[in-house]
Length: 332
Ligand code: TRP
Image (cartoon, rainbow, N blue to C red):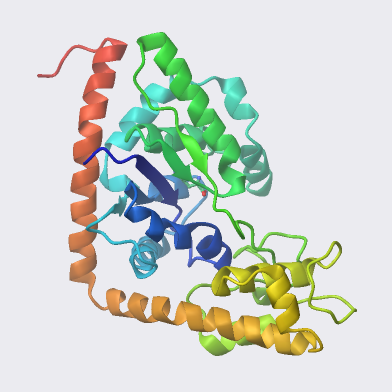
């Protein structure tokens, strides 16, 4: 790998991705591939911190991988692989866990949220989740980490762990910086625009899935909750319209005042239809490519095996150095 900066990001293989995942994360990953050395992982190890059905998990993992490629991740330019295929994530996780305090992990808001939501399964993995995430990043000495706002606290912890390790054992890890997508990092529910769009929402109309068919997408946008005045403009208290304008702007590149002009004198119905069709048309090539890839499992396998090999090679070197630093006897 050349002198380019290293980028690492991970996404969980739970179900299909939402429009929120697409706009806030995956869509931005492709364009980074020329400027940086990018490593993208389907973080299956993380996903079992909440109960998963094994058959579903395997299916969803492969779909997530295919979707990553369908969204423009080029497995030749980048390293795209399954986290569980590189055993060094789990090995580094252990060393880092011994350099992370119980108190630090107890303060993680995502742990508090998830342990409240899954009160019957507050397992140790859920608690140490951020340590594994730090291992993902630090194993490659990534300097930039594309994340959504909800992962900022975890990244801050990864930075603290890196700094602490560097102080204790001598400078070693690159201290990573967050890379947050400029626009539309947050997509809100179509049914309650004060809440984040989420695939676990009970109301299926609240959430667009990347693989939804065109008429489904258009229908969901038509039903989107707005407000009682009738002007397409970005303003406080117009959460529904603000959300739709943000989404429309992401796909068309138009600024809010341009959108306002485009729809002045028209009703919300016209606007919602335009947003729905724009989104559906933009996602059409992703759907097509996804279907093509899912029909070529041999090619997918070739890609993820190659990704795992390249990822393993990088981290093998890191872990050897780390083991030496912490005082283990050389195995060679
Ligand atoms: N925790 C991240 C999420 O749920 C996923 C993730 C795991 C990740 N390891 C990572 C993201 C490393 C960035 C870097 O969104």
